[in-house]
Length: 313
Image 1 (tube, one colour):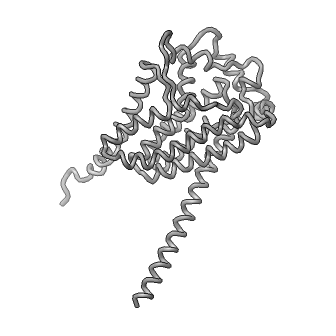
Image 2 (cartoon, rainbow, N blue to C red):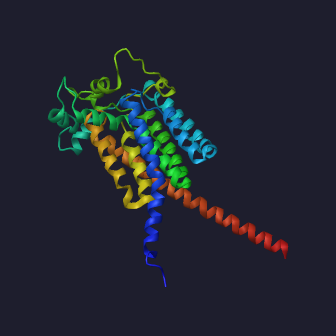
């Protein structure tokens, strides 16, 4: 006869399984917010790497962390460096405003949002919230990737190579077809982050130390496809596959990013659609590649077993 508490054991085990990633996620979130709002430091990849390394040391997985993460971050920073070259090759700059009007019933959603909510000379809470969504562009996928690494290393490895492959594919697109963002292409659209950044990241007389990431030159014509839209969506796809319905907050975050980048004047809706297409292609392309690789490896193992069986007989 089973004890009375037997049916509760799987639930308790699931709760324990979620305890570690919840603690790690809370640690990264609290320290990141402290860096931004108290120390007034930007969240660069190097600083995130240090925070994650500290947690890995506590968990006794520092060597594995360095082996898995340093190659990934080197490739990520390499992409960020190359991205800045995209608008400097003399390729014609494209304006997709007409395409945006085509899918938006003759309107430009950025213009409508800014007319309704933006107040010149004022910085509202949603201006700051949108800016935070915008500047968590790489912090969110890196933080989510770290949770993947804590819970299931294979998911992290698949996510990291997919993210890098998608980024370099987008770089080729930026190189050949540079696209201007709304704040450059549409008269009257305000680049809101130019007004929100000083309100919560700068203090008079305080110099913010630069990091390697700040030496990289941004590409002002890398609007299409929007990797600001693609990164969180790709992370949400992997999270849904790993955690199911528990990953729905990642989708809510993704929606917040999409709304923010349109309101801030950084991207069109068509840029978001392009980012979604890139993310879906990368996600299912990696799935196809993984399945093909597993089948080939299984056939090779079977062939080796058969060969060894014949030689032993």
